[in-house]
Image 1 (cartoon, rainbow, N blue to C red):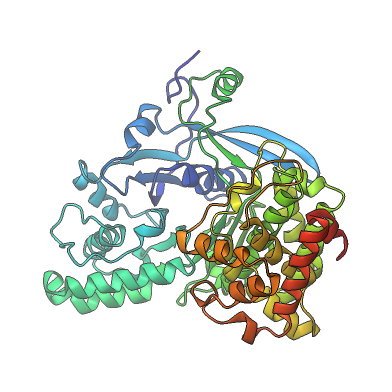
Image 2: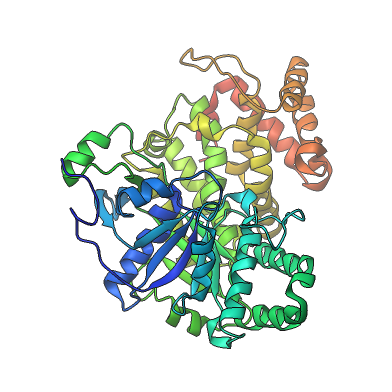
Length: 490
């Protein structure tokens, strides 16, 4: 079997126009895969320089394969299973700024550079006041980026056309807003280092750099340990950087204040390449859509499925009763609480169900159930309130899901004899143990809904009728079992 490198496999050549902070599985299976497709299908013609954001990383491995690797996409698309392999060749080189700082900073001098993309984990977008301008490099990602931007400002004497389009992919809401704020903090912290350039540099960054908030969505399991031998045999290369991901992808890019949607689409033609990349006025409605229609059903289907004797998400979807329950929660309840066009919501919901039905991933429902109450609070409770406000009644499926979570924390055994072993924060476990010890479902319902450490409010008082309906469903589950309780609301 051949080694994978530029001598054994063809590698395209394109101008280095993108600096990418991060070399991990997600960026390689999502962003670099998207750029590969843009190069193939449009005149984007760009390559990526990867910058390792922390001292220890994978750039040596990447460079060892001349930055070539395969992406293995798996899932279901338009009802059919998909399992495909693509060799990605868009990364030109990979740098470690801790040992190659001069090469890293020299990127700022390259006239063609236009984009900065990052995924430095949720903790990566943070201001560290201990960073110094003279550090080589600054320890934080926003610090490194500020150093790079100032070098570029100097190299091109504040040329308005040499600003950068910055698209962070860290999994925090309004990631671009947070990153921009951090950069301003570093500009203030280092104003003495900038001297007479301070005001001009700040103005150049404000006017001619474009920081976008983004939402990314693709499940990336990573290196396929179980299947790696057969994948290497199939591609005929000893690729040690194969990355596995689901077929679904979505990237919502919020236009920056100082650039139009049309301009950003022209510069970053992902939509033109037929990719699921949306350049929008705001990412907020799409963030709400994902949390509500993907994470929301996950949170309630898991305890309902588990207590019905089902262990895998895909099997829950195909179950004659639980499958109907999932669709009820998805289409009849949660979808009715959002403010995007209904056709768009229905398409997204259909995509979500196709993702739940991935034939290549055995997604255990118990893996979703850790911290179920806080998850319900952020993902489902807003839907309960909006549904009640719009329809004048409580959504039965979501409230049944809440009753199932409460029942799961009782412990004991399922109908099939499997031991129920809930796992959560000690204070939540203790509260549920104490409440269930009373043997009184009224007290259980009231006690859980009164827990302001979970809900930040007393739901007995703020959501009319919720206490009575939770008690009713708790009683029903105790008397008839989970499956029969679900049947009663379908």
